[in-house]
Amino acid sequence: QKEVEQNSGPLSVPEGAIASLNCTYSDRVSQSFFWYRQYSGKSPELIMSIYSNGDKEDGRFTAQLNKASQYVSLLIRDSQPSDSATYLCAVIWDYGGATNKLIFGTGTLLAVQP
Amino acid sequence: DTGVSQDPRHKITKRGQNVTFRCDPISEHNRLYWYRQTLGQGPEFLTYFQNEAQLEKSRLLSDRFSAERPKGSFSTLEIQRTEQGDSAMYLCASSLGSGGMNMETQYFGPGTRLLVL
Image 1 (cartoon, chains in turn red, cyan):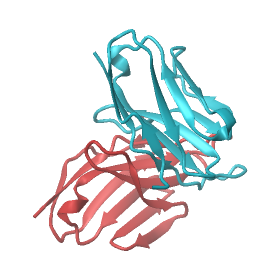
Image 2: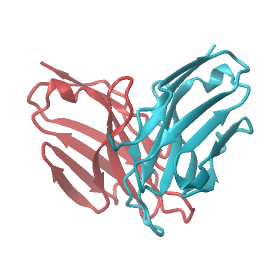
Image 3: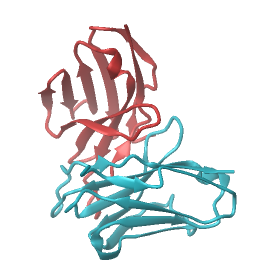
């Protein structure tokens, strides 16, 4: 079983709608969660980080974390064509090791239709 | 530009050749990571430095791969005797971390795209 799972998409939404991106993960302790946006041919760009259960809002973006159900989601309100990209979910496990390496899902491709 | 920089941005090489990539982290960031990303996949961890010490290497990093971070500043990733399966985007990320915190934010460079013919 993959440690971080995402639907590869594409997820197609009309301009102005809410895009909902989901990510599930294996049961580990003390996780930290991140959403990165990646445009085609470019490197990942951090959108949001979340560490505690509940919602975290930043502009048009809201991250939601539910550790009991082992999922983290990203909502994008008022979606714009410029939001069209691959959204990567990433997790840092607290496995007692020396590194805080990111474990990524395969990403969800979002397409916002004008 | 004070972000993470990588050089070169693109590299085409023939199978069997050696290649070296460079990463300059954000100034004063003590942690540096290398990841590899292939088409349709998320980035996969390769190795990690805290200052000049290489603290972890992934099993993905075969004996043909070596990484250094002399003086705890820039880092190099060398691939010897390249194979076609090495073709990928090589990403460098840096962060400012202390102790065992796992809330650090990693900032990625633009990546080096390697094509092995």
